[in-house]
Length: 316
Image (cartoon, rainbow, N blue to C red; front, top):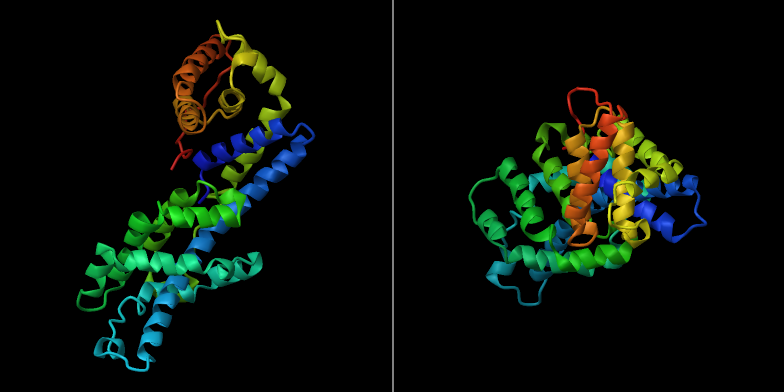
């Protein structure tokens, strides 16, 4: 689930934290990175659980209306398609989800207002109205409803984003990203798998986990060497005039260029320039593109940039 795009971002964020707190060691930085990634994975399960809680809220509201002193005809004969969603029932029985939530003590108990808020938005949406007014029961339609809800309502929801930031600092800016992986999970749900449907693993494979540990260690241990390489190509700029975020992004990029022979050069350059676009200044992508391109040319000329031609599994 946590691919190398996010791994690079998290590594740079940890390096930035390390730079602001000089008392932290390299070992502490690696430990913080792993904790950061664990909390990122927690959010995946936390949002899956939200699907169940929103459905439970809707069911509770139907029951409350049925029990009114003077219930209407509609109160007594409600449309129950939403609460009888087969995909949600399967998810609620999922063994892996139950065990993970219990083990990590993940709960929305202190943030129940967001459940009501989200259902109110869902209830007004076109995808919800089309779904409850359709005829017949269809498992694929049940899945598609929640895929649409995540894409159209949850992934960019300001109230939910604010709630997540209050719950955990590691969940800032992750809602859209994790929503995308939940969409993938729902897509591959199969009713025949019942409670044993497999959910997304934390890492695609051990190689990605090793990539994260190796890259942050390389960037920290060889900081002076990496800075010297960058400094030589700054031309009219002095190193102390370059923003710390730009320096950290370039350091990590050069570490990856020189220490991961199976990752193509263009993949590394594109990924770090894209990170600069979102986490640094407006001019940073153009600035860094020129510096990194110059570094690549020198490394090639000095035979210090050896790349192995292989199938690229680096990016999703």
